[in-house]
Length: 382
Image 1: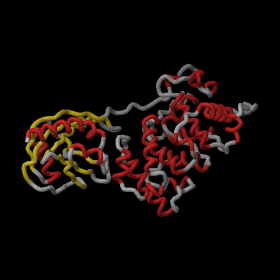
Image 2: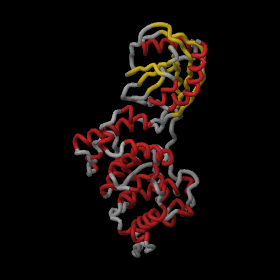
Image 3: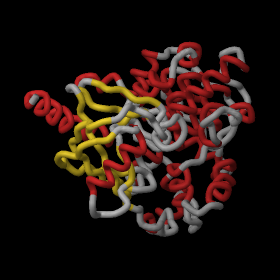
Image 4: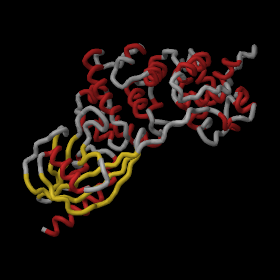
């Protein structure tokens, strides 16, 4: 599996196919470039299926630079499948906090428990079995299968489609519903079946470091001579995309409810957007008038308590994949009633300094400094 890599490291070049077999030359050029230039990333130090799987889950829709510290902390806390499977969702979500796309963490924990129960604590070694695990789709299954189990299957994601679109000057929109299968046929023809793991990582590395979405570094590209878009001087035209609709804006309203120096946190249901994370009470704003009345009604419906809305703390913004969000936050007092939840899974009255112990989504963390300040002022006023 590693024979070619050893030749490269000893400065013995790979011999290109002298019969002008272009797919073979592309494969060889990519591998030679990758083995000389691959970045020293923590998940590349091993072929351990567990660590490869964790890294690939984290890397989905997230930049490598952001993933590295999360990966290191996660592996330190959960060094193997058994330790992960025996953990609880709150611990996993706390380590995942800030990485986003929290369904990945929930599915990863579910998958770890299944692997320990049904596969004796070892990741399944076939792609079909990998695909049965929660959160494991075609890309992750292909990556783990190739890197850890030497199964020859091409990975397909945005990086790969962009490279192939330029390489073949292919006008197929990469975000079309049929694009994945279309580019998969290209990728399978180019795949190095003797080194599928390294080859797939080489393509990904090329997309991240050289064949970038904007300002690609074509002068350093190891397959520049085969790139039709480069030959035709039409790099900016590829890849082509179907125009997307504008991202909708949602408006939310939240209550920082203070009682005896503590404020109320609610835990979202396990399933759905941001499932299992904690936040302050609130909900979607349906009209731009009578804001305090709307907030009081939302809180009463969610928690069973009546509040006194005192003053606005601020407006906070955050962007998710499919929508943007503006949130108005009010400082509130608790007037009457006992907690009776309708929607949230749990509640806690916590001190401001206790919030680091609870996994919360990014919007809440944007609010935290102002929440702490407001809580301090409230306590001093008592």
